[in-house]
Image 1 (cartoon, rainbow, N blue to C red):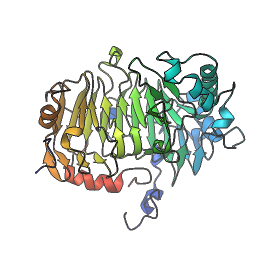
Image 2: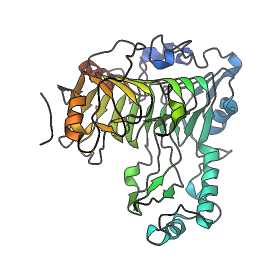
Image 3: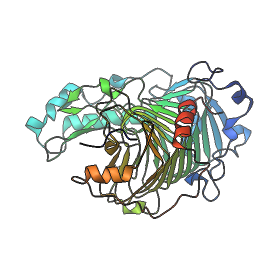
Length: 429
């Protein structure tokens, strides 16, 4: 038998309301505190705190946000998001749906008929409907992909929401994203990817936040979700879930020196990928990431999955609901990863066991200490090795490094309480 369970505040109104004292200061000028994770390395992360008055913008719609981002320029800038901004809008601010983007004769019905594996086989889709899908996808990407340049701070004002956007921090440095509810980076045109095994899968295009080739980035007190179009409502097509969302926050392509703190990842399949491929050897020595005081709630997998990086995972709260029968794992140990996990708390239903929390693909090591599982202290490493040895190699505890850049590390019990109260948009003290 596998191992089983071992031995809001009074002044707030609604989840996005800031405590009254928070309105008295301007968080848009805040730098990352000293020693607060990998993004504090070297000169630290200050974002757009040096922006002059001409480059401090309050934006209320997509057009204003695009102007403020300035094509991803490196000019120091502060962007304050007010109200709800929908990235799926035209230049006049009118909402665009999937039918508005479709072109070249694309329809999902025709696409399914063209590439049904029973008739099309395992070859990559090609021809008229795939070309039409690509053209339609390009029209949506032009609207929803928003590029964030160096020396930029983006903060949400009280109750701010950015929906439908693929926020890309691309080949940039010194970026801060805080206090913002980001939701529903919804792909209208997923692509079918067959494989020789006969199953295949649907591939989507947009992460809610994507860090690619960037360094010194601080993501803090954000809420990331699929709210609006949860994938659980999507049909099964070709025997596979027709997913509409990619990652909530992916950190890839040599990105480095990143701190993700006090944020909520909610209701999603693949939450966070650090390192995008086993063969991307250029990621060696990079992908240094700190994750602390975050809540992973109703997340199926990748919280995070790591390749190559030295990743410090401490004081995070994991909540798996009773109805989460599709849960796969939380911490993914992949090629040359070096995860140092400390004082994290897991709350799960009875069908999720300690041995389910860690999954390994070509990984060799995991440092774990102070883990709390449904209120009981557990050791993830020996349990993983004992109950997954038939399908995965044993992991050692030597990850080759010890974190030095971190703030106070609380007990898992204390972190569980504090993260429940304080993580997410609208909760900066």
